[in-house]
Image (cartoon, rainbow, N blue to C red; front, side, top):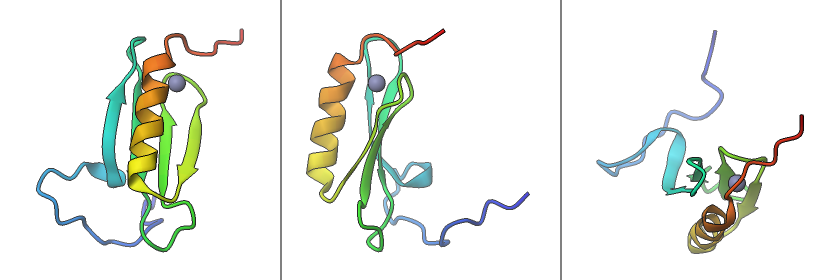
Length: 83
Ligand SMILES: [Zn+2]
């Protein structure tokens, strides 16, 4: 099993999280919205993804990504469950 789907560059930050995650916002329902930096070669460099619902979006700007992720985290009370 190979996981080498991306370049091997490592962020210089000592507090770097795996997979380029630059911010995490917990939701009231216990999920987390992750903001990920995919690197300068990607069109939508920053993505937000929620673990509690299908929410996923892309952004060109880190501050915008954090802002939207935080906004989503606040309003994501219930996962969209379809039985
Ligand atoms: Zn959500």
